[in-house]
Image 1 (spheres, one colour):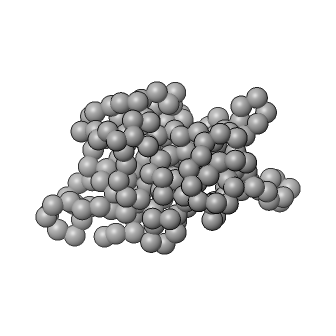
Image 2 (image 1 turned 90 degrees about the vertical axis):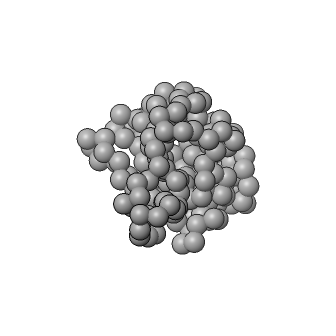
Amino acid sequence: LYLAYGQFVDIVTPDGMRSHLAGTGEPGFRDGPAYQAEFRLGLIVKYRVHNLACGPDGSVYVADGGNRRIRRIHQEQGQWWVDTWAGGGDRRLGPGGSAPPNTVAFSGTVAVAVTPQGEVTLADDYGAYRVAADGREIRYLGRWPASAFYSDAKPGGLNMMMGDADGAGNVYFVSRTP
């Protein structure tokens, strides 16, 4: 079981032992060894939501909203590491557009879900994206439809809070607005 609170990601083992998996406890941004990593979790979210998703390979994907990135916690040669899986760039994608994941910029609240096939789907206030299981490409799936808002006026942000995927690979996101 993985839990996020403050600026830590914790692991709870099957025997009930809880310990820090990643994070220094200080807000910031740093990839590298998990114990030295820094996050800005829940800092731009009204309700301080922390969204995690587990991949089929044992990786933990963290929606690091304060840094507008998806971070991956994974084991490499017996050590836990944190890296940026997507976000942190300045590129905006149009519908159907694709690019390397670290070149793309996200807006507002970020949420993450992982399919059983290892595809990472993420959402921000203005649309959804999918990162291939090998992590080499992100594809913009599109903006949220006007039907997702109160009126047919110009679509606004959905303020994504959390995501999940089912066994068939369908992805669901929860929004606190509208």
